[in-house]
Length: 376
Image 1 (cartoon, one colour):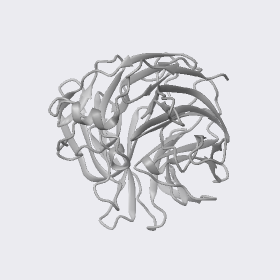
Image 2: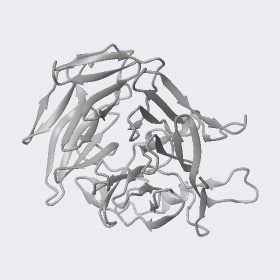
Image 3: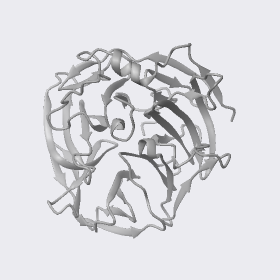
Image 4: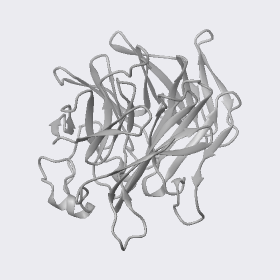
């Protein structure tokens, strides 16, 4: 499928150091002076989900050797704040009418549990234990069944036996400051996007039948960081099922590290094609053009998808060949965080999670307020 390039007006993206110096310190999240953020999460917010009239937010990287964080919720009507866990949360997942939380279950950090939100409290499923070499990476739903991906295995929950069944992986999964997962509509595999900022990350595919792990790459030349999908240089910041192809996913790449670079890709098995690359700057003396960095993807209610860049939200038609651009509004403070609900159907929240692995400053986190048209 043909791709299309969108060229922004001259001067759309200021050099990062000028942006950080010039933005207002009190009113804008990309301030040179860091704020304390939420009392539990801080500013390093890794993920957000809207469920049951509340915004659920997960923090990350409480310590260098611990990627977990706290979990809070904000009532979308009153903005009343509730703390559910102060630490130890590794992932959250919305599966139909349920909300799941993957977290550590003990101070040893070797026991884990998935908790389900029910009638205003979290109820625990059975615990499972894992070694320090095989750590949980992500929680996902496989036809309504909780599945936990780990570095060297995956665990699938049996409601009948009330126990977790371990299956080894043929290959290893990488981790990052953010990990995003998506199961295509044919449910034969799961794609894992890894965000390591300036150290890349890339995309991996796990065959759910065999457990085989495949690194998905496309390097068009032997030159350093040539893409469009290079694990050493391309952090994958979002993965969603492709709305037009049941065995494919869409993946977003985004990095701001002195310059901006990113694109949206379609991945079908191990085949990688370019969907969109938005040029934001290109000077004659530069070898490489500067492109929009995308920091998240989400399906849209009209059957297309949304992608968020540093200064704008793009609403794409299902095949990705055309997009409507919405400039990101000025954020406001809520519970120590910066967010905005001015764009219909989405909530945008600013986080410094990418700042941990690049010189990006604050970047936007995209959270859908509406279910996709398919209801998935």
